[in-house]
Length: 132
Image (cartoon, rainbow, N blue to C red; front, side, top):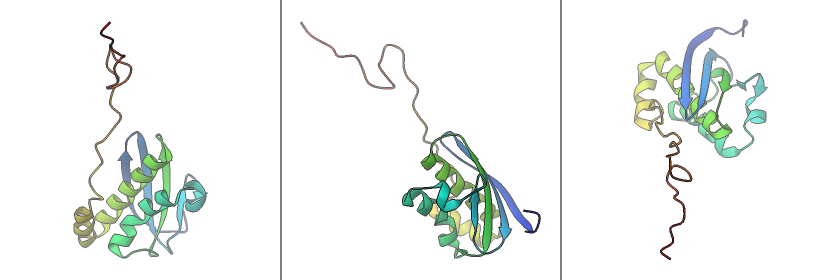
């Protein structure tokens, strides 16, 4: 990271996952937890999710991303990384901000796991009721 010039830093969140993202001028290389992007995210859908902000702003091969992702599952981490990259891009240029806001990438997804309620099997599932 010392050779690259840091442009922007941001934090992204989704469910229980948190991504700390650093954006630098470069050729489009993405490193997640010191591993290559393709190696870390095995599913194609997760890779598509992470690349969405770059495709929306037409900056596919202009920035290098270094990210530390923690917590949650792989899809939640991909969503957190997308949120972090979007926030970092938005802080670079106001035109990016408008594009990313319109695409819904700057809004943190508020959905989370619903808590278990007492007297029930889970959040909503009940025990079987018998009449006789």
